[in-house]
Image: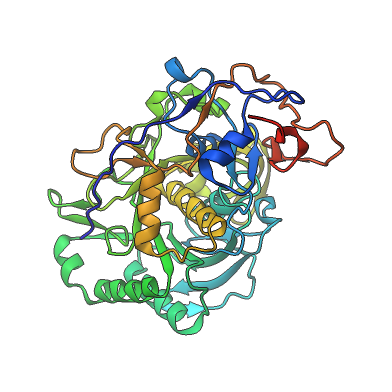
Length: 449
């Protein structure tokens, strides 16, 4: 079993507004570089909250001033890193993926692995666009953590007649035997798995084979990440005799979720200290609560703020309270193709991709390091915010994801209507639907202290 000690709490750097002589920004790119040792810094202004929250320390509005809605990340942005998304359905024609390599490599059903004819679109029968959303959190143009990582979709069928452990096993076998993987630059993300009893977990042949293959792949430099699950239980729960797989397997970084879903601030892409509580989403059809405790290594945002197009089938519409009439939509065979939806989606399935994205950024930013499961998990814990999450039992990891930038800038002086330019030069800046995506190598911060 996995047990990770909780490291000593790291102090958070709090920095007031910093102004350069030739711009009106409140953040200081040189200070960010000094703290993070990133070669260059990219900034997405007015970013979704699931991004901004991982690039600053613990935020308390009574201490830190106005919430900084920017997302800061290294310009290497996961370039050269291959991310394999084990999920349900994908649409890589979505504009989130227009700047990256994103393809569906494999489709798996009833223990059979095939190569799909269409490597861009393959919807799921349950939450049709689930893999689209989770992959967007990894590398999406607008809501992604690592905006240059490559995405490989592994479409796993889901249904009552599917044996998920068998599907996972045969997929891992196929990849091990037939897919050339780049050592120390490959990450697997399991967006879902399955549950079993403790007895089955300890004795089932298929689960043991999954563990053995993961061990083999880990030795080759593959980093494996998994969701903790959404049942509101401990991932390894003795009291109810229930285990979340692959979360609790050795050599797997297991991710839980944190959010106060009832906070009205989320709609403005802002948070307050109540954000740092175990994620819960209540719905008339289904309650989605983050798993936690034993077996879970780290936590990220339990919700992702997504703006864009989505195929909403019956289940998606019901689970996420989507009313197609609120949007411009087209009725299609599989449901409603909704345009320009503005919604935050819950679950540990959007938390684990955030961890994957940070890991991809760390790999691309440090080509001199051959990351392994152990060294990556150690660094994620070192960078993370410790003991700030409400609801986690004593003695278990209480770590919230951070990408290395802990400085907190007070955005009180930032105009909310229009994001400011940081350069008076003619250099072109990319304007996204979220905000300005800004390079640190512009002239604006050359003389900043």
